[in-house]
Image (tube, rainbow, N blue to C red; front, side, top):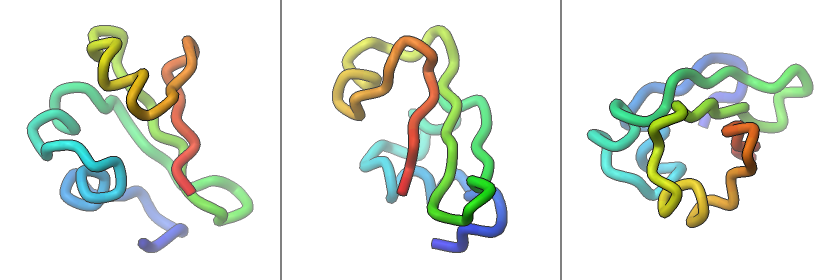
Length: 66
């Protein structure tokens, strides 16, 4: 995983263990962390709680992907 650029949908799907269609539907954006230790993944408000819970995403809908 390249930590200096945004991840593609297929890369996110693999890293998050989600279907690519779920990534397209529920991820609004991602960006590399400033220290290049991973990415911030931003989920949409309509993301099912089951997906958020499985990834331990908090109420802020931001996931720290390392």
